[in-house]
Structure formats: structure tokens, C-alpha cells
Length: 272
Image (cartoon, rainbow, N blue to C red):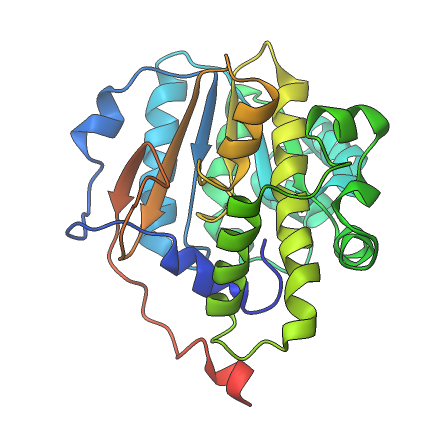
């Protein structure tokens, strides 16, 4: 999840052109299952959640059994999530045991219930706010073990293209009103989340993996897809953006356009 208001604004901006659709595109329905499937979202877009669930449900009903990595669970809650998967009979119980306060959990109920029904492992995919705060203060490498620092070359400066694009997204996502002194740290926090998701995905292999995360995270040019390619270029990864508007620009392997969610101006809070 991006910091602050970025969660909604960036997700809506990470998009591609096309007409809003009430059903899944044939290209998504007919595609083969990759080793890693990155499924994006505009966090508050109900239609996007519905279509993404339908895509996943159809594949699982046909026999696919991936692990599900969810941005919505923080990594320090994995033990609670494991306990919930063993002891809970429904998704509401899992949410009560292992969920936090930052998400509209009813939007994720169907995916969590699908995992329980088909015994798909649920994996916590996000850094906590404490982790992110440490990264803002001490840099990306501060939240990773030595092997990950080596795998993702975190002892070196971030690639210029990644850092620049992330900076633009952070600034735009905060309505061009973010103090300059805060931008660098927030870029590091966003990148650290992407790298953690890439790491936890690789930890699930050789089992196939689905990532459920915001559109900004599932981007293949600067997000999780980029870092997976850096560490494991032979891995078969497919990214899908569930978007409202905008230009794909090579951000995803495919897109599903959804009708814009009705919402207040997301910049109101920042302007105040």
C-alpha cells in the first residue's frame, strides 16, 4: 500500500486506455497460468475486485492451486494468518484474527473465502508501517536480510529509471503538494514494499503464486514485476492491471478496464 493518500490516487492512475467492462476480457480468460500472476486493483473499486475474483475463481475451479500473497496483510502477522487458516471456517473469522484497520475487508472477503474453500495458502505480503518508517529513515536495505540485499543489489543506489518514475508517481499521488524533503523517503518505502513482495513470492516457489496488490505494485516496469525479473529472469511472470483510465505504457502484460468508482475528490484531504 502506498503511503497516505497515494493508496487511492496512484492506483487509479496506474492505468490503461479502454472502455469500462462489466465482464472479463477474453484474453484474460484464455491465458495460461504462469508461475507468478500479479493481479492489481484500484483499492476502492468494487467492480475491479469482483472481476478479479471471477478470474481467480475460474482458474482455481479448473484445478489451479497457487499460493495467494496479499498486500493487505502485514508480514509480522503471518503467524496469526497461519492460525486463522487452520482454525477459521469463513473469511470473516480470518479477517477478525489477522486483518488490520487500513482496508475495506468486505472487498477482499471473496478471495479469502476462496483460499479457505480450496486450501490455498494465504501469505502476508506487506511491510508494516513500522517497517516502512524505518525504511524512510534508514533506506531500503534496512528492512532486508543480507541475502536479499545481495539478490536485489540494495547495497547500490536504486536504478535511476525506477527511482525517477516512483518519484513522479509519489508526487502525483499526493496532488503535487508533498513537501520535497519527504519524497525520497516515501520512494524508498514504496520500493521496499515491492521488493518484499518479490521476495515473498520467490519464497513460495516451486508452487505457483498469485499476488493481490495495488496496480502500482504489480507494474512490470518499476514494481514487483521489475524486481522479480532482476532476481529471477527465467521466472514466468504475468502482470494484470485492473484500471479505470490512463495509458498502459508498458506497465502491465494485460489490462482489464473497469468503470470508475464514485468517490470524493481524493485531493481534498491533502489540500486541507
